[in-house]
Length: 304
View: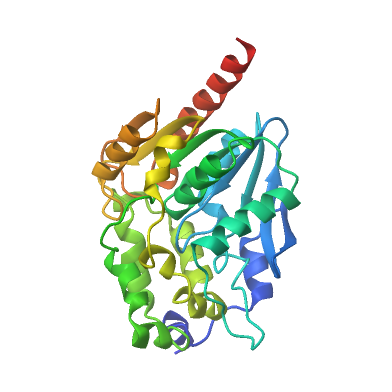
């Protein structure tokens, strides 16, 4: 019975239990815009900032970060309302609506708080948007960008995100959500479902099923539906840019990666055959190697 209740989000771990299960030795909490942000900082060297996507968390980068920390200082964080950061609440204690302007201010403020003066941004999906957005608005801070299956253009929402735009369903998530639906969504972002590690699946379920997180998701999906993300700004990105895309991405189609490649001057596009929406989890060794080669190319350009 307890397992059944957990699978519908009617029970579940406390925040302290989630921290015990999913925090890292490098985890810390940084106050930013009224919320305690879960941040991980590891390694030394040039700064590399990694930003996750919708319904994910900083640990989506674990395998890639393990390689990069050997040469760089790697900064990761959980965007609200996900992971161990959770939602931003209003004066009434209800999840606040989070729009594009909020996330832009959030990333600006957090990077300023962490004193990130010059960095490489690496982002996936919505985190890819936040990475190219940061590069476009703050060319003085971003010396290079790696954009993986990044959001930029208007498109139909994946069905698993569309559900949260339906008011009765958004209301229902405050009380319950079927675990099987989340497992289907996680499977859908992989090109090869056999590559989903049991521990990774359990972590996604744990963090998303946590009631404060899922209760707030309906208040942030407007970033995908309310107005434009400003794709017309892509041609003004000045930094060197590597675009990585999964050829079997069902959430943000490969054609959008090709369009982004055309729109960002001098960008490079790598298409990972047979891979889905989150290449850094499905093919972390290749992703990490490509990131290291890209970052090292920036250093060589600086020297020359």
